[in-house]
Length: 171
Image (cartoon, rainbow, N blue to C red; front, side, top):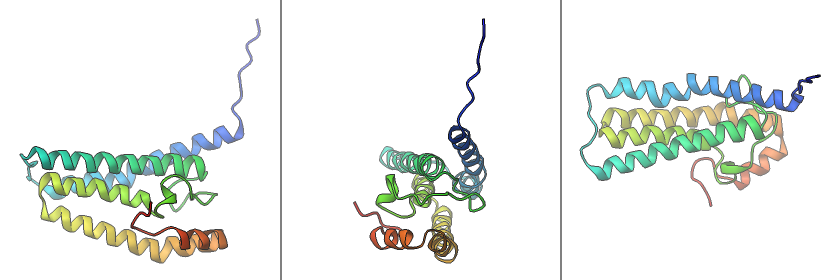
């Protein structure tokens, strides 16, 4: 009896590579920005006893995780054929999914996770950290991402930039 092994297509192999690279990037960068650093900064702060504030923080964190995962894996790895990492960018301009409403949903997802922790731990330090994360992302977008995308995708990116806002989603 002969068993023939199916050889995965190039596109499936490439997609798996993009997914694995995106997973590695996620473990290193967003997990550090939204997890390890806030954990270190909050020190001995304890979670709020308020059920309302705990619920709000849970919603913000879960929403942020969902936005990040959807954007990084479905948007960048599968649709864009690349990763969120600047060293392995997408081959296609991602304008679908959440990118139809806002140009930088992945950064917003990470920021929602940090803001959820601000609410949960009632931490002014985490609030300042969240503001500095947004400022760093904003400067990175202005000084590196947007010029790079304009050079790479030309008029396609210019049209997208005119239609879709940078930070405040338009539904």
